[in-house]
Image 1: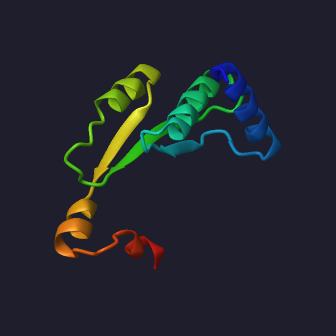
Image 2: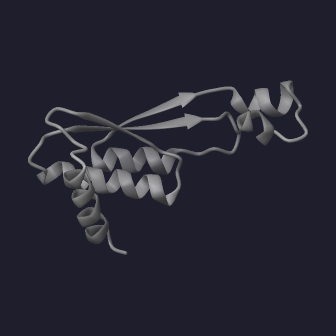
Length: 110
């Protein structure tokens, strides 16, 4: 599916459900996966011509894993002119080092 098709469907959903009002600030949670990045790109494109003006921000929760590289997302947000925030946490350390759970998934399941 091309971005134009995604944009068409996003616009229809926004209109059908009155999801955006004049002056809204929309925060998109960015995991780095294709769903969140596609939504961010679609909303950034929609922002250019949608009759109700809105701002857009992207947010990533950094879980604290050593191999997490957000440089490409940072560059994409800059290219899209979207403010990007990275919220650093110690979740990985807490789950794997301090709590030493056999299954860390059980923490979120409760």
